Image 1 (tube, rainbow, N blue to C red):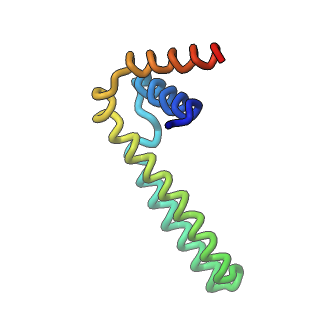
Image 2: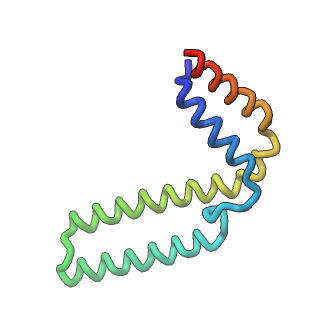
Length: 110
């Protein structure tokens, strides 16, 4: 059985997303271009800092892992935002709203 608060949070997020008509910033193409430029600049700085002795190997690995995680999340959300227009017509906003009302009524009754 699904936790009601989790179900409510997911349904509210989807319902709010269905109501939005504008494109989110992460869905725009320039985001990935900026992301790749940032990655190249970051790696250039890390390698330069390693050569000059400003940065230890361990610190460079930790920084690279952190940047990799950030880039992965940005790329994941970019793809999700770009694919949303294909999914949204197949979701029933009225059904989601009805379920949210049921959850809210049950919560007030308890």
